[in-house]
Length: 412
Image 1 (tube, rainbow, N blue to C red):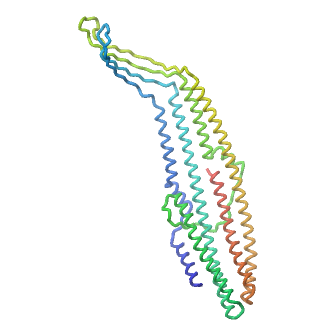
Image 2 (image 1 turned 90 degrees about the horizontal axis):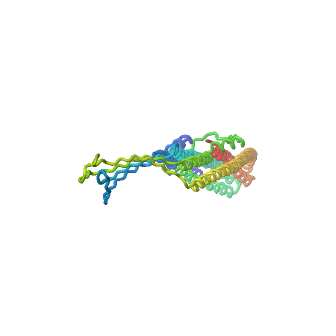
């Protein structure tokens, strides 16, 4: 049985060394270039920019042609064809104001790019460190396999010398079997985190990922509530989205004011006149040419007043949304700070437990090796030691995960 699990350990180790490790930075760089959601958001922003030229051009001119069915007679001859052309000109600044509105909305879309990047960062970093946690648990279990394999040999020797009973050997073998299965289970669980990373980076979903981390200690979290609040209300992408929506609403008020001013227009009417055949007046058959100046007077004001009120209410609503969002973000940051500090305390506790349990285990192992006694206590303490070592690395990962959560809300 010992040989069987030694082969298992070597097999997992060879698999790990045969694959090239991927760093977080390389995965993030790949994701920034290839993530489909990020690409879609960028294209949405570029598409929004194209609305500017659409709203900032003059209205299309109108051209009309008319052929009188009943021809009107003039002193110089019958009118046989009418042609008219008109061009309206909005009030000064109207076109620029419309463009300003769509550009403000486009900048609101631009903030989605930063928000999406923050989510990608968190998704990859979080899954990467969870993957590291499982990898380290496997390593702990492999070390425990070596310990129990050694204990198994001691137990066999004690049974042969009559200082122990056969159940001691069976107990150790049962524990070895349990650890071997735990290693396999952890290997399967790693697949879910690899898929999560590959999905974010737009890599083949079932590509293996070998974590590149060494000598990982607890994360350092520089937590400053005042600084975070100042940054969030000014720079957070979701807050800036609302700022740009407020700006767009203000520009809508400018557009509405411009619409409330008269629009000017220039036109030209041309009439084709045939010559008279029954007389020859001076300028017989001369065509008609009529230049025109037009003005559109917005007399009815109720709609403009309602539009101004609408935008005023929208701006107020956006302001309250900003305050609500900022409060929610700060509340979540405080919960992440508590997670971090709790993990640091668990880390300290696990260190103390490991130190005490290791000393106690050495005493019990010495007693069993020399006298064959206190076997059950030694096995229980070995289980406790395994748990404490897992608690230690789990606490380390929790500090990093809490830091990543904070960065998702503040690192912009």
